[in-house]
Length: 79
Image (cartoon, rainbow, N blue to C red; front, side):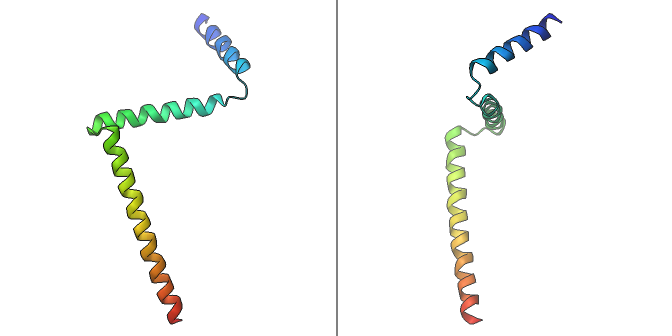
């Protein structure tokens, strides 16, 4: 009971002190960050390796979009 009361009081203090600071978005970002770190630890990848892989994926998606656009343009020219 004491722990519940302390938790609720502290939550109210935090929300009253910073009402416009988007407390829940900070909490969400923290949870996502912890999840990414745990995933990196389990998969054996460093954060730098993950960034390199993400950048390579973005580049591949750009190339794929360009190829799709070219195919669309060719089909449109024939129609």
